[in-house]
Image 1 (spheres, helix red, strand yellow):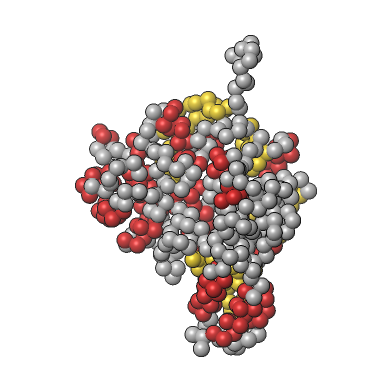
Image 2: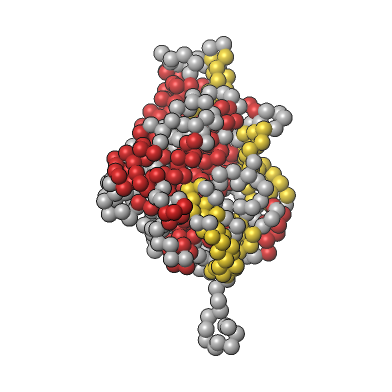
Length: 182
Length: 330
């Protein structure tokens, strides 16, 4: 395609990568520079994950990779061969029932503009699993026993979701919504 | 972002060979700093050697009572590991004081040590920076340097190292294990990072092509009381303005082991050797702590905007040492 195309720049380095997105296998030929966030939004049309800062500082792009919450703007997609990715579009149960956190965000009106919401929800899903697995946080008492689930009091929720910024300042209701599902 | 070749390494040797074969290559771990710097144009690798599939992701207790942490153990997993929480509490606390839940899930132990300064002149390719582009000057020296170094800086660079983890490792007498073209070796964590001198482009003592394979936490500090405390502009998710890691043990009423390190004050974690010497063999009193910390911080040379760091670091250190003293210091 490029050899006889005089004047055309050679294709940038690329590799075939297969990953599962919301349960579906996807095989793509990826420019190595593609980050997961752009793959989701531009190649797969999954625009739930948002591009806020694009530098890992705001959390709007948060998705789950192999069940763990991560900033999709900082993950090169080519590194994710074989990974299982879940976006906000994949959280709903069979039959399209909203995830309990999605329902709680609606009931608590836990947003204003809504731009950070998909990241907040994916982050909260990951955070609940971390606390259940006994992961401590900065505000957990260092004397608390290792390996046991951490009780998610308000201070824990606020600390554990600090990687998700909300410029509308909807934090109180976001914390309320998370408390509702504990 | 500049295009780059991508190689997924299956073993440590494969990674170091791939690195040697590709000029301009960089190892890729969690990527939370490297990918960001590539987006900013600060890093322009010709090739990325993906090391995330190497078998360096275990935390293993060794027979001599030490604990080996693989270079690819993620920050969140290390902070939660029972052996770390129970035996090296300052290490867990330091990790949890850094970044966000998302970043800690991706960032690796080795990558945390190799992260670059967050000096805004380093991160902005339109600005002078001797660390990013040797010979262009230091924008921060007479520019905005509220977050910069007060100890050990040079006219060439006043940047600080941003890691919390590295500060705890320095205080705990950890070692950094490396593997490279010339084989394996290890360095003390306190000496792994450099002062800037005339070569600020070199953050650490790592040699070209060398890979961090792990970190060794020694038996000597296992189970001793240790604390990490960090001061920052907001309650969470911010780099340190100043931080302190300390481990302290007393017997017969006097200090018989102490490790004290400051973060965010220098180009590397600042192991407070003068303060430690002053404390060894004396009773752990408030006056002894004040004397020791003041001795250490007498070397500080604030730049102007960052003079606040000296009293801030002093108070943090006195608080931490006071908490570690077996009885309330008088």
